[in-house]
Figure 1 (cartoon, rainbow, N blue to C red):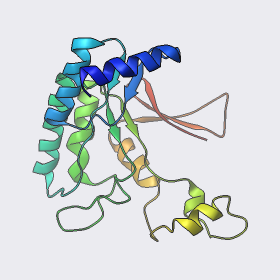
Figure 2 (figure 1 turned 90 degrees about the horizontal axis):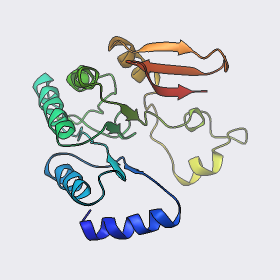
Figure 3 (figure 1 turned 90 degrees about the vertical axis):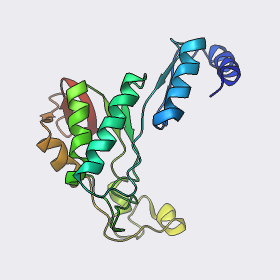
Figure 4 (figure 1 turned 135 degrees about the vertical axis):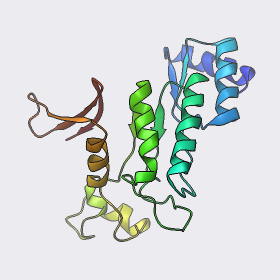
Length: 194
């Protein structure tokens, strides 16, 4: 975003009494660096930018190491965290055209880099359970499922939980909300599931 566009946005933010805006789709590489540089030149305390990883075409563990190295550079260039969109595990394909699972070993270097650098990860890991349930009058998402059919057999959040567990993330049962599950990574809550 240009400095001029940021100036207009800050004017709108001020009118709404919004102190900080977080851009979760900062992308990566030069695009991210340009965004962060423009923010730092004009409004360094008003915006936070998260990096993203392009998961398309994952081939082998070297691909994961390269993606982790790019993420490290993005963080050094000013990104404050990593945002993973739900396309990972749902639509992203590897180099062989297979759906890339959230717990794929080729992604391990990315998760390890986040843990090493203390990078917060925001992940939209799946659609609501009702999207995978029978499409009938009892399903609260019936209309959405009717108008936007889903591919059958997509993975559920269990794959993500397995991966996070293998990367030293602890699970805590919330005492105040016994039906909730909170995942903690290095002392920070990263997932809250009711």
